View 1 (cartoon, rainbow, N blue to C red):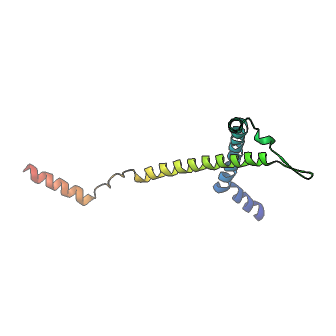
View 2: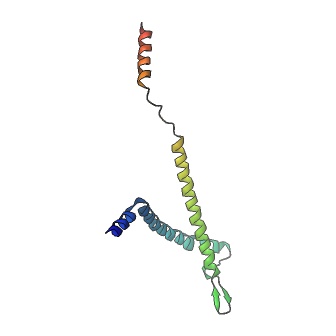
Length: 126
């Protein structure tokens, strides 16, 4: 039973769950970026390049077909994902920096300071 308990403790830890959630969200995000690149960005680039469809760009090398157009699309996918993640991290760092720079409330006065303030006020009133 020790092995099963140890595995359960490992699998339920926060870091493992966070990683699992990140992988699922990353997969969904990748699908969104792929759709953006395949259906919006690459057709627009193709129009700017004279109506070329990058996914159809190939090179015949003997009996092998090299699909370099698909490689170009994969590079654009990667660049967009990297840019988006960079912007998210940059925004999070900016928010964290603002949180650190936020003015902190002054510490509450000590008992001695409170008593000295009361004595000062009493002496003023006399």
